[in-house]
Length: 159
Ligand code: SME
Image 1: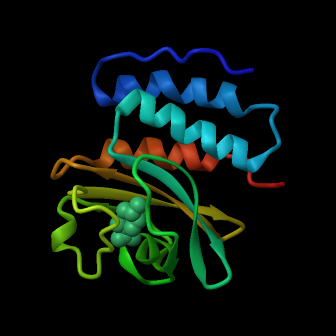
Image 2: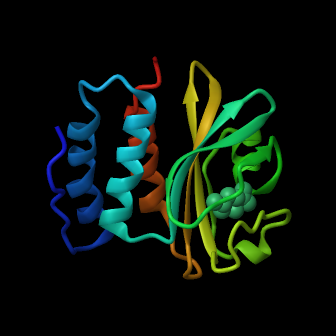
């Protein structure tokens, strides 16, 4: 059952360590995928205040927009296109300190300056990505990669 989140102010590691168990509590025992993805991005948005955070899910040869928090975004992204499609094609996390320097970056909003995209891998296949955008340059680093990979690894997609 959802309760108010406890939002702390600290360094990035402390903030992830505070919010991750709260996300686990929100999604545990709830089998509905959309509900769990929605609460995950809502909790991350509340804790970190990022410009945009959301999921894209693989459907056929495209990523299709899933639950997100932030401004309206591109609905479909082809494999290999943009940061999200490249993360899917290469099955690895991409940290982009300056989106304008990333060839083929898809600008859903001109305000987005840096980005991290984490693939969701199940049984060796990418089934979606978690995308986070910031209006600040060079906003994401190794700490974000480690904790966001932990978050997507613990999500239950078996529905
Ligand atoms: N910038 C992404 C597209 C998704 S939006 O940022 C929400 C990309 O290049 O794949």
